[in-house]
Image (cartoon, rainbow, N blue to C red; front, side, top):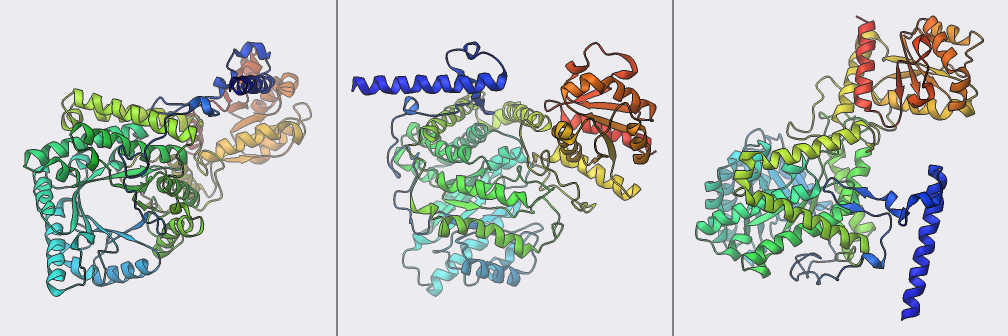
Length: 629
């Protein structure tokens, strides 16, 4: 045994030496300068302050959590979930609809093609509440659970659905065990108070829960909507911590109304966001169950602490530009939620951030792709066949514990100021989430965080969006918004001038030399909707710069080349660009290359991978707009 431990320690030491060698070479330093644990240079930190290691080994092993269905329910709340069907494939219906018969046909068609749970939007601008019975004609609610999304009309919609259940029972609908009929009334007054969405008052929610608790069917009145926090910019632990705090306030209200803690726990379900960071999503859903189980334990009802979780793919991560990439994002999100143990999953349509038809496809096509994303995971990849397949992974288990700890810490901070509503009023929740949003926005603006098709690998040839392009909702802080605002400016410029904003590239030396930086510059400019005009290799001393600038008609230029080429020709090239009529000269590279150079031979700015790209591109568009006034 001792020999095995010694061998493992020796192997680990050798691995550290190998890491040091590679890092030393890439950083151009001696390996001895990297310290005794060089692998720590590869660590990353999440917005929750959780450190992610580059490699997890037996050194990171944590105690194995109990089996699914056993407190603290990390591995799942239901030990008997049908592994043949996996999680429930949820889909949304009724949004903006007025024809209940058409909604009914869509629902039945979807059920025949793989949907196994329904979310029905009623009231307001959606399906009229009086049309619920028509929309649900032929829908077997003991086989396909239903959740209402009725906002301020939730009380009326709930009365309608309960009356429908009574009518069906009286008519003999063939359901022997009424508990198999599963309905969520979907009221969410506390989280709606954060997001600004219309909803019923807390007292009405409590009254509905009392009614639901007395029914033979399995009816949950309240949805703790964590997506309200996520869509505002919250991190994973912040979403969980705020949602748990809201859940505890619901428990207090329900028990004060006379419900037992076990019944009160049964009246709540959680709706959480799933993102394209698959491991974060897996760990978040596992951690969410663990934290809520701790609440139930403190309340003296451990066995009732298995949180019911409904995952919705993140609306914040969806992009308007190159929206086809959203299919990849939602696939990863659905994967993470399913593997993380969500009871039901909703995949948002890939064009959800766009006006209807803006992506050039029908609504039915978008819905089919969203549905089939889950069906491919379930029926072809068989992801539902194993409960909690991430269990035992050193990384997943460690990340789960870390997120749970951070979520519990935030929950305690909320409780310390008087609970959820008090924290909401004092700004404790909003300020914390706003700080996280600002940090994420900065990372995206500096392109430390990649949004494919937006701040990296943009498609400048993409057709302009309709002028009525809208975001997915006023309460959704989409990650791509700042760059897409720049692209909107480019579209407006194109419409007014017949061409996109343009910047001249001045590549020095042969293609092999300048290609790296000219490609970088073109990609950066395109992310702001600016077209890069590349005339090919230029020479500072043969007059080619002047001729190329004259042909382009541009007033802004980016010099591209190697450090060595800059040292030889950079100053002369800058001077030649100015003499040719260029008003602003930028350099693709660090400022240190022009240390000591002053006057007309010094660039006006420097484009590097670390700049605030949104600020730099905004300034360029301002300058180009100014030239065209």
